[in-house]
Amino acid sequence: MSTSYRQPGVVLSDRRFTVPLDHDTPTGETIELYAREVVASDRVDRDLPWLVYLQGGPGFGANRFVGKEAWLGRALEDYRVLLLDQRGTGSSTPVNRQTLPLRGGPREQADHLALFRADSIVRDCEAIRPAVTGGAPWAVLGQSFGGFCATNYLSTAPEGLSTALITGGLPTLDRHADDVYRAAYPRMERKVVAHYARYPQDIERARRIAEYVLGNEPVLNGGYRLTVEAFQSLGTMLGRGDGSHRLHYLLEHAFVRTAQGPALSDAFQEDVQALLSYAGHPLYALVHEACYAQGDRPTAWSAERVRADFPQFDAAKSLAGDGPVLFTGETVHPWTFDCDPALRPLRDTADLLAERTDWAPLYDPARLAANEVPVAAAVYHDDMYVDTEHSLHTARTIRGLRTYVTDEFEHDGVRAGGPRVLDRLLALARDEA
Image (cartoon, rainbow, N blue to C red; front, top):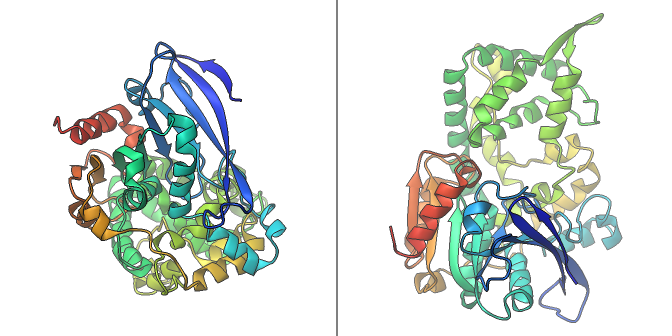
């Protein structure tokens, strides 16, 4: 039974489903999925088609909207929406440092985590779709990593889809993680240069903070060990629409005067801990690079290895000269697990995932080339998180896919310009634009 309740303009219902942990062993262990059904309050009794939303990440539960926020209001004009907490996230059976020891040691934990990629998420969707729609195909909206899932859906179970809408999430179909990060670091640098052009005072602020961190490696009030590389990773904010402004506000209150001299303020520490901690979404760190893994080539801590090819990101060298400290973002490193108390117990597990060489393919280029599902995708110019050229190459591979390419928004465009972005994609998918 589902529980229903109301918010302004909408009726919400909690839905819970049981699915196999491993879909290749359907009679084996099961896990629970949680999803929130949303329908406009004036459309409750209508027979509406369904749209399932796949959140970005990996590792994040679906947005907890209040009423008709962001893109949801536009979607509710046409659909009954299912906000799915993908396996291991939100209110679905959780995966974190507290639950993973129940699987056994690091090897067993790594084997378990290999079941939390896009292919398993799509099979979850197909397992629950008959109970939701009565067997009818549904539309899917995939944001960022959710778009990776939608592309897998088109590759493996297109019969389950009436329409596919993708925002900032067209993946490369066959590139290794190394190729992804070789394309990413120059984008990161461009974002930092643009930030410093907007806020030139932040050049000296970032240098001062980096110098303090490099010399002290402070432990934040919440237990996070702040290294200079971790400080640099705050640059992940620069991939969002308001991220440059928020980074500026963060840097301006970094220090306070104390009896022992300048120190990082409690307010700054609190904000940084919240931004850097993976306590609320550990799967992001654990399976992030595995999202790109296919075949027998390990990811082998790709972002860390590739970073060595871009010495301009070495903060110590920048501080030894007069160059700006460059921020990074959208990368996970071995030191991420050493710094974060929410990840520290899982370092060996993460190493084993990085060494893994038996990854199943995620995409079927031949099937995508024969696609018959209406597909539309928003692609953002110089997207910090998903390479634009990789996305456009994939767009040309999927038969019938129509793109909305824009520089009006950053990677979070479906949030910042939600109704407009979604309206454009729906028009493209219906061949109305």
